[in-house]
Length: 248
Image (cartoon, rainbow, N blue to C red):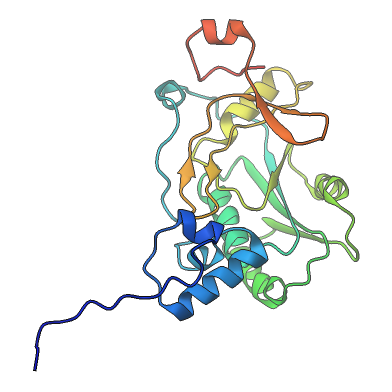
């Protein structure tokens, strides 16, 4: 009898899948089926998301000058509004935890979850239980807005803005993760001039392996088809050689 262990090769079930073309993971056939089904449903690697820590550590991607910046403690308070429609539960949880863990408590007034009429079962009782757990230690921190019909992204943002009670309202997607120090630069800039409307540069969470990809500082714009795109700042910003400064 041959006592040498034979290498077991697992058949790749979805060689043409956008998920498995970019994500090299040793999964059983059953796990591949689950991962692909979830990917087709959500458009990102929910199989992996469900297995990652909800409060995972993020790599430091900020420019060294950003790390050196100091901000006053008496800044305006902020409300974070998260919009979702049938988002994966683990993705929403991780977004909420990232905001709680990386925003100074005295600045974070509330987190508003706006559900634009989701139908996923896990966004009912399971999400309720998650919110109730947070309310034990941070009473009133999480606010919920549920639409009785799908109203669309613009109306969902307006609903979140109306429910928010912070001095400043940050409207975000529910599939984001913020870095430590994400709020202070925005709040300091608004404290200087409350007429400005700001957009943070949040790192991209890759859809296949959920790793963070650093985005270079840039301005948001739209083309004639209303697709979001990134535009370079004005030349005078680059001439200062300081990426910690706000740009436009």
